[in-house]
Length: 113
Image 1 (spheres, rainbow, N blue to C red):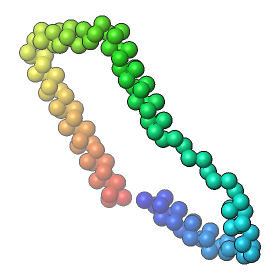
Image 2: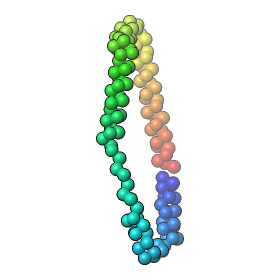
Image 3: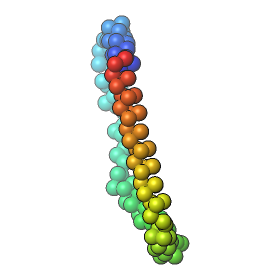
């Protein structure tokens, strides 16, 4: 917050310190004589991104034996003892709650300083 205030103050001081020097339209003439910026073809960039993502997904599917590993891991998860699942769920809940408490305390500390 104080950085923004300092930047605003600095911008204001710099603008006040350097008044515009009249150049009889020289700056405007130079800017008009510059070539127009080239427009990028955003569609091509989007198409390449989507195509590469689809290719990577298809390659991953083929190399993973048609997604068989997902079925194998789901079967392994069904064989975990119930006590382990309960302990994992409680531990995860406590860690998430502790993270929320620390985040709230940090935010409160920031607000008060």
